[in-house]
Figure 1: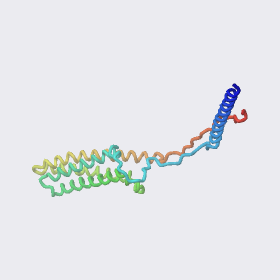
Figure 2 (figure 1 turned 45 degrees about the horizontal axis):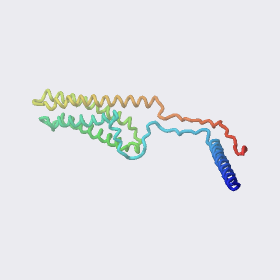
Figure 3 (figure 1 turned 90 degrees about the horizontal axis):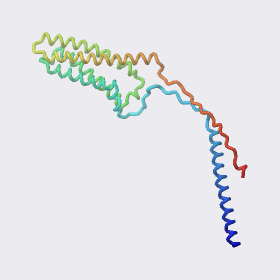
Figure 4 (figure 1 turned 135 degrees about the horizontal axis):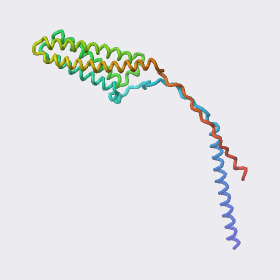
Length: 223
């Protein structure tokens, strides 16, 4: 009986010591966490970043073709090819009116195709020195005028030349191209006006984090 009582007493003492050990360890962890929170900086500041600044790396930006500017450039390519085909199917594809239509159609095709390629592979981010917005504004405005002249030339040639149905079709699609380029130029002009009136940088922001006010007492004093 005495040996059994001694074993129970020893087990009780071991349980008590383990309980005190785990309790003390847990409180120590809480105190360490509290000290770390006090050392954490009270505020941090974000850096000023330009709005819409592209990441400088080459990659296939397929999302650009889904934007309004990407779709308009694809529209440029399609309408230019249509006008060129209509011109080549005319009775006299080597005449001066046909040469002018071919120049406007192929000039617009290669210019829009090159711009679309540069934006899709994000090469424009490495050529930030070039004012792309102003460049495209001038290009689309100039080609809007060229398409208006081309439509008038094709219409005149369709009325004065026998069997000039191809010129009539070219005149129709030339005026369609004028509307597409004109709408594109309007969007670029609107964006240019907004970029002039508004700031081109995100304002600097500061986020303050208040220090935790909870105080954890040192529970070691209890033991």
